[in-house]
Length: 308
Image (cartoon, rainbow, N blue to C red; front, side):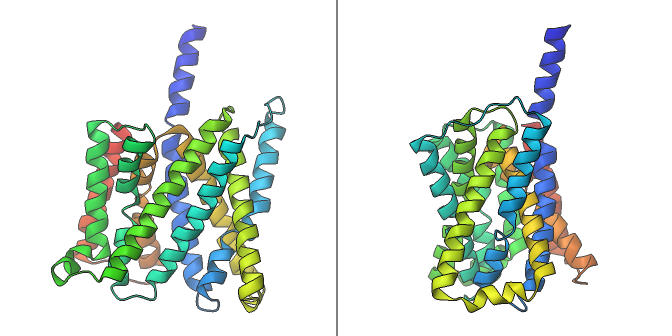
């Protein structure tokens, strides 16, 4: 009886990646809505910093609460290899975000964003060849179906016949590649700590966000100090961006410590559904016929990866 109960408990923990991913996708959609509002009064770099500037104390509080909940859990043993993974993940995510911001300044922005959302497909390919993370046939089908959904929703299909500018192509794919590498390195770092669930992911979250905050504060302090003032003038909105970003990261990091990045990111494309719902309800932006078709594919892709 004890062995059977342990088996069911292990299976239940394995499936926890699904609610954590859905939670992360919803928080990210909310964060994007708040960022859209903040960008009306602050520059792109300052808006990027808003994701991290208040997130690191929240991540520290989350880790502290975990140890209060289970005080007997061991402390991590940091190694040089683990430190390299943290640095790589932090820098890669900053680069991915910077390239995403660059897309705002290029023509065919929607096309570039669609290419950046190739993250799930790129993560699947990189995971197989470099991270020993193979997928089942339903998993691959779900990943590819999610890619088609992004193709429809972003406007890539409409622009394909007109040709995509080289700058947009390189920037969009570069952003997607950097996001994919970030996720893969985060998962590797969480597994490298070999801590019980969810402590490994919580430590990685705190270290990555703290390093990103230091790097961005240092960069803006030297290159554009005025950008910091823009955040202080909108403290409430800045706090909302940081809060939703931190909560979303808790969901992403925890889910990726339990399941392969490709499946997590494919299911995470339901963020598009949440975003369109927020756009229709909050920003009063109507949905088109193509949006409905893409949303159906995203739902099918989500079912496939959960089945996988």
